[in-house]
Length: 270
Image 1 (cartoon, rainbow, N blue to C red):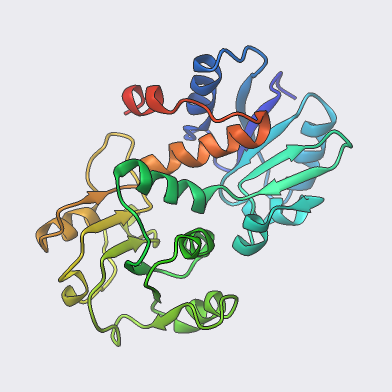
Image 2 (spheres, rainbow, N blue to C red):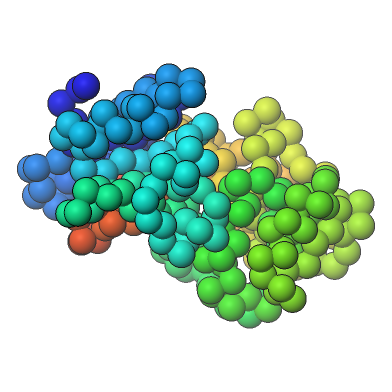
């Protein structure tokens, strides 16, 4: 077991930006007690890997793909955000030895919108996709009191599975049946990774003030979804880089009880 007391767990893991971000937070906050690294989880071995980490020096960890459901099952206690997301992206060892699971993804997204100067309140919001990324942001979005929230997905039953947890608060549609326009459109699909865009009707973007792709590139290149939104006249397009940093800041707060300064991370990491 490496000599880390905080790690990011997943497989693959070498690409993760979490150590860079968390160690920068620790440095900027003068916290010398943090040693943050990566921990590769062999296939099917999450419980054994997490047990060994927490039995050694482990105090907390971030969880990335494909382990967020494993971490959800592993945690002894769950925050409301984790329960509603059905997944965990941060674990914390508590003083009594039990492990708390949290999900900071959705609040990271909302925090980044606020950082960028946008509010979800009274806005018509559209989420593209109904996978884990979409499920993770729904509750924090609804907390901001949008005028409406619609989830569009190729398979409507997946969107309905999310909506049923929030009776009367979420509309569901297929791409073919989607009508109307939206103020804020969020791409929660992974289509940008393969240089594809979801088949959203152009009319949906008629009054859009913000298009946000949860995917991001380390070099700051615009995703294909952002490029499409640009071409349709959307004035503000962003990727998920800011969400990555803001959800990391919430993890830091979970572990250390203090909100880190994110300015240096935004200024230096991309």
